[in-house]
Image (tube, rainbow, N blue to C red; front, side, top):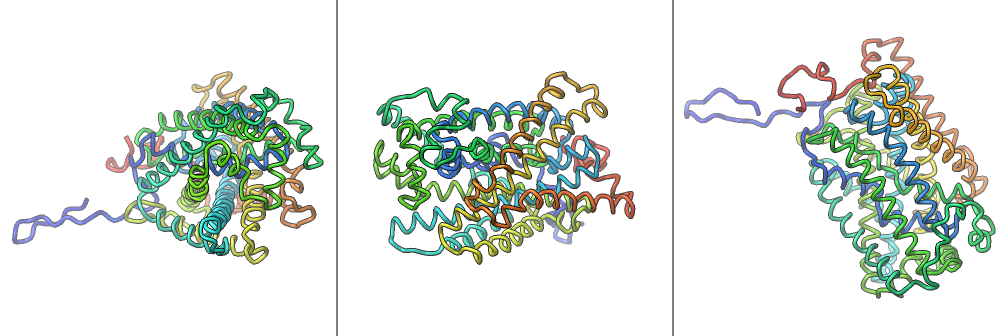
Length: 521
């Protein structure tokens, strides 16, 4: 607050302080709010309704084991990630971590890549929102409106929420999260209470079944472990968001640690529980056939008949509604993270500095509206390519995650290397043989393996062999990274002063902000 001199009447005139550009709202989020922002980014219900069928297409009835493998890999990755987050507190997330560990050149390349990957996720989940909204409204009212219309409404709503305070967004996400988790737990418990279709089988819990699953081969003619693992890892995208909210957290180090572990392990248990209920509810081979029927338009989701059978149509109606709100909440969480990456890159002049301008509520307003613009143009391209409701799910909602997940897995592998180097050089006092060496090496190996499986199976995953978007997908990732590298190299030559600060803004470094009232204590 800024006080003006007292006027004649003796009353002080107090005006709100102008927004401090380059800084986000401080101490706005507690642990529950950060958890809501993270877990809704994973969108538990949307992950089950969308990703379980994709995982079944590749791994058959072994889908719970695919989620188990991903849980283990991401938990190991999180050990080193949290160790790094304790030392570096910034909205830059992966970008800042890689800059600190591997240097500014690799950091900028990774920062640009990860920022755009989150924009791709915004587009994908907006398409999924449009699909579920269109199918649900048509099922309830008989009114058939194009999915792209709902996508426009969803993007407009995200833009409005992003302009407001981050705490309001967290509350909206929190309500959606609680409702969708409760609905899926009720369905799962009902399936187990009835004993499922064929009893409780241990086969879906055997990790070996993920590779060459007989059920997938029988129904789809092929089994792809890469497909199953892609769907599993895609279900967790966003779990690493905690450091991105560090500047807005009340206790960033503690919150980042608890929120990351809670989201990885909690989501893993939830995913395994619900996916096992899905397989049990249908029966082993029938669960694969149900996905085949969904992909051929028999029903909008293979989960809906399960809800009708084991609970009743009222729960099905609730799940149909929550499928819309869950996918929207997911898109909103990705939108928030994408805007914070663009904000961080603008603050350090990698991208136009106007992106670091904030609103009077200290939200990254310009970066948010930039995400809106990019998402609108990207989505328009897909709508022109295929304006059908199914296209919103099977093209925009499926092809874009392939691009984004590949980019995120590649960056996560680089983060693992950065963690090892950072604690062997810059922060040797924090070196731990397992947490900062063994865990990052194991986590990085898992990410590299997942990248290879995704690239090798991308045509099958997309269901579109020979389509240029899918064929050149790996090269798009490489190109974005190289563009970032070039930007950093040019800055090193032309603006060495700015280059020296790249990836080094951190609330953990008090010398970067000497004004007492602007530090985060």
